Image 1 (cartoon, rainbow, N blue to C red):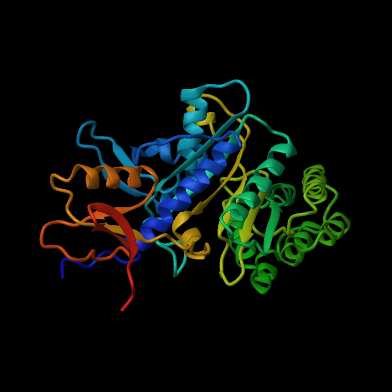
Image 2 (cartoon, rainbow, N blue to C red):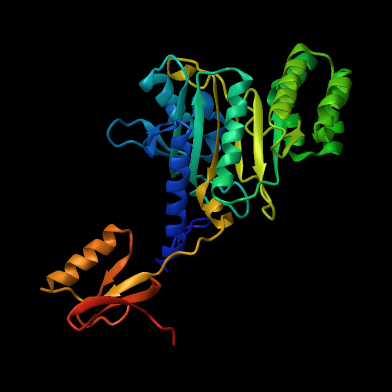
Length: 384
């Protein structure tokens, strides 16, 4: 059955493809309106470029192949963000703030979840060159406005900070293998497993690590964390930053989750995840990843977010699309040909039928051009 696609791959048929393309244009224009410039990195790169710095967590998700020209190993990108960091650090080489956006397919060896595609259409925005909390706030606000402009309600935006776990792991002297085990348990919010894994961790860091899965909810979580976590400078700075974000964006549905450590080896500061009603996982993920350009010759502060445009299209309200217009073959009729051209110039979809063709398959046509008394007029097509 050679028409079958690999698992977790799917075609986008005309109606879905049209919806995705409309949203792509809308969102890229939205990013452009906020000063973000569009870039189009290549689908393939040498593997060390894709997996250096910002991309280390992507190793297992990246398809690898041999380049027939150079003999070197190449990778099919699993994330565009490291490519954007390379462009900022090595090609654009701006001294100040750089704002970039992108939209293209990525490929994953395994789906991120049972319902995810292995070929997401990743759209995102990245800001380079500003290390302050104002940049994180700007990206969180851009994320919220992105969903607002396509009519998708956001139920909450979870905030976290990977610096808190980093500080606890360092202060407790966790060896790398134990750190990885604890990290996995925190991601899963496996409290019993965390208790067993931290049995040899010295106090007060043992209690602090076990507390992290409970530190989620409203702004009051930050006060509890400040009281019950060790008074390490890195933890205090992280909590201050989160408190600033919550205070500066009181109009947004912000919440706190200090055990959300997705992308731990990639991010190094504030992280955030947006959730929508009736959608089981985060619809968009983002955060700070300073130093991403170091491997490309220039370390830069960086923060950004991305999402799968296919999933966004499934959640967005379906706009009432105007039907197409049926037109008979123009042939040598100059007036009909001019009318068809004028209608298309106005943005109408006009299907010029071929000889012998009486209807258009697929597109919904609600009007037609008819000739009456030597003049071409438009009539509504009556449903049977």
